[in-house]
Image (cartoon, rainbow, N blue to C red; front, side, top):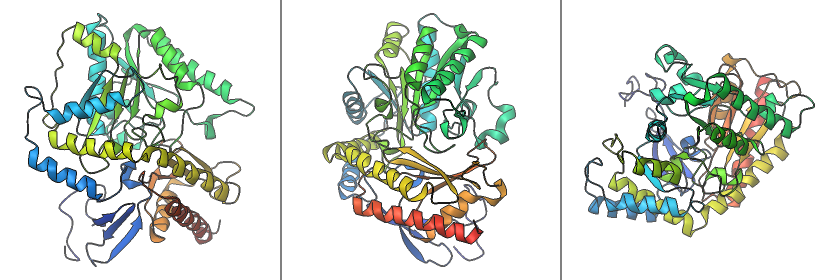
Length: 461
């Protein structure tokens, strides 16, 4: 690529060349400037959008990929299946809490998984005779993917340009986000806040005729929209109860927060009783750890039974669903994660990361208002005033300023805008690979803390 050349691949900034990922080793990623060819090796503190589980260029996974390339044969999933997809599905079901799931639909991306989850949910209601149900409920300030149904379910800056031709807001309803840093009222306890949020869900159901609602969908731990916010105690349990009271499916999106990211196989295992899982759940990202494009929908026995007892047929089978190569590699990733206890390591190192960032930044930094997260999934919310929680002006793009400084000092992060209301507010997200050591975690912490204080100096905070 010459100095004057523009990239042919368009994504984000259409005309500006982006750094090229040219190498990696464990938790480290090497980027190359496409113009100068200068290379920089960084701690991969966010693994893209929280994708990494086993790190870059793992020798075992490379061997698994070679084997998969030699043994895989393409099949169209509507007519022919393959053994690797059945083996991966079996692994996912057996490693979930007992009787939580009974079937798996394997897709190529998180957005595909959410789209297919919506279709499965609607079909479930039809199969049990509830054909009048067609509405879905999700939450404000949420991200469920970038395809049309996903954008309709979501509520974030990415959908604004397309609002006029997305699904009818009367069909895709929204309830309040779980955002205690900003939404907990003065003098209100977490228990009272939880009750208020659950009541909002039920009130939304009642106001929109619950007999017409198919399902409620929420991210177990919120991802990129306002930064890795876990549910308050009792919230998910309360929403699940209200859903089932009205025959509405309780659905969780764990594309970003699941499959070990938050320190348990499913993030909801930390927030729900073992026998009270979701009716339908989406997963992705760490499932393939970036080695393959793969995601999935997990289906509860209740939903599977309705399908098999009804039409026993699903319209779908997209071209690369349950792809044999992808499934073989993803299974190799998951077996390694299990054998090496990497989820336990992510929980230990991740919670240490969060605790240290809290200790070193909260009450000491002039621009970090909150540090929140779970397991290996953490965010810093950046504010102009830590006492009033006043956000920075949107045009300052403080998320990018801090993110660039972190990169300059030797680590990647995921800087995100629109934290407060999809227009203003900034946060920076971290989600390292599960293999990270204590020494490497300390290094990442030092880089982040140093970068925050350097930015404060630069802006005169």
